[in-house]
Image (cartoon, rainbow, N blue to C red):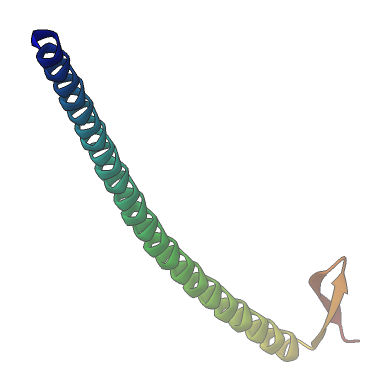
Length: 107
């Protein structure tokens, strides 16, 4: 009977050890998942920040392009006025995809 009791105690001890080991594994898994979620949250926050910075850069660039186009239009207008006042004609041609302004003296 003593052997049976010892076997039962040993079986209980092994079962308890298995339960403790399983609980430890679940705890480690939960810790790893929490760390992964924190990393994912940080990555999402950084992505959001970068997207906002990109949008700001895009808006600033678009504004600069509009300003430069407006200045180019002003320069073209002034060139046309100057050419008219000096008796020079100006025509626009396109060479290799680039616009070229050509001034010609009126005789």
